[in-house]
Structures are given as structure tokens and as C-alpha cells.
Length: 216
Ligand code: DC
Image 1 (cartoon, rainbow, N blue to C red):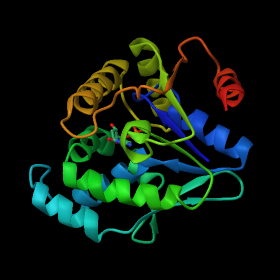
Image 2 (spheres, helix red, strand yellow):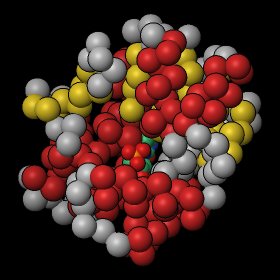
Image 3 (tube, protein in one colour):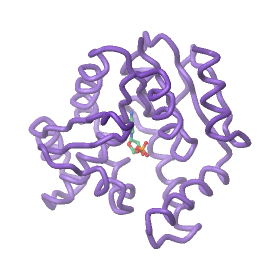
């Protein structure tokens, strides 16, 4: 069974998807982490984000893998190296949407996501899971929240990670990513026709997970 969870940044997708996968004993596939891992490599190799040919080549030559540890932790491996923390740096967040909008990069990532998800029962979260990656997913959710609340969540998260960002900086990044992710030519963020819309603005994580479980 495939469960697709899409929505904008800060809506609570990852937290909810991870918990849901744990409760259902499904694989959890954080597709944003895959685009982040590639972004890390692009920056490490000092490739300019405008050099799309080089980025596409790098995507096809990279080994990106997600490991679900038995305790529920997700490890992100880039060419065998654990990059789970490195991909959460603000500089990655700043550039990831520009890399994720490259059509041929998406082809590589979608292939990988289908391969990982095809192994069995899985919960995938991202922007295009229900529309492109798994259009026949058994259940699709579009998880959303008010912009201010999404900024608030990401700001708290950044503080928790010891990142020195202001509320305004987080708001600007989120608004910029919303804009790129929703308006790109290939697989833009949008609700699939058959997805269930879930507004998480005034709900706790547990309440959202319960809601999704009932639907499933
Ligand atoms: O979920 P996240 O914030 O870690 O995702 C990082 C970026 O990756 C996001 O701004 C857009 C892109 N992304 C995407 O284009 N398609 C996906 N399925 C997942 C993420």
C-alpha cells in the first residue's frame, strides 16, 4: 500500500508522515531529503545552480539512499555517507527549490522514489507524490496550514537545531520556496484531484495522525 502526502513546507508533512509510517509499520520515504542530498553535493562540488547540465549529470551519478532504522530514525545516505544533519543547513534550504525545479533532475529522483516505494508498503511525503510519483497511490493527502503558522513551525525548528535565523528570514525563505515549488513547469506543488485536504493549522501532530489513520 502506498500513502502519498503532499503539501507546502512547514505544513507538518514530514513529522506526520514519519509517525504514520511508524504506526503502520510502513517504510517512510522523505522525498525532499533526496533533493536536499543532491543540493549538498552540488554545493560541495562548487557547481553554479545555473549549470543545469552539470547538475543533471551529477544527479544520475549520485547514490542517494534512505535507511529506516528500527527506532524510527531516518538516515539519508549520499554516496554511502550519512548526510542526515548536513542537508538541514539553511544554505541547503536556500538552494534546494532551484535544483528541484530542473525537469531532468526530477526524472532521476522520481525513478529512485518509485524504486524505493515499490519495495512494499510505504508512506511518501513531498510535493508531487500523489500527482506524479504515485498517481495510483491507495490514499492521498494534501496537508496544509496557514502561512504564518508554517513560518512559526519552521522558525521553532530552526531554533531547536541551533540555527541563527530570524523569523523574517524564515518567512522570506518559505515564501520564496512556496513560489518556486508551486510555479515551476515540471510537477508543481498542487493538490491531486483525489487527495484529501487536511488543514493542520489548529491541530496537534497526534490529531493529524489520528485523522489520517481514520481515513486509511
Ligand atoms: O520537504 P522539504 O522542505 O525537505 O523539501 C525540500 C525541497 O525539495 C522543496 O522546497 C521542494 C523540493 N521537493 C520537490 O520538489 N518534490 C518533492 N517530492 C519533495 C521536495
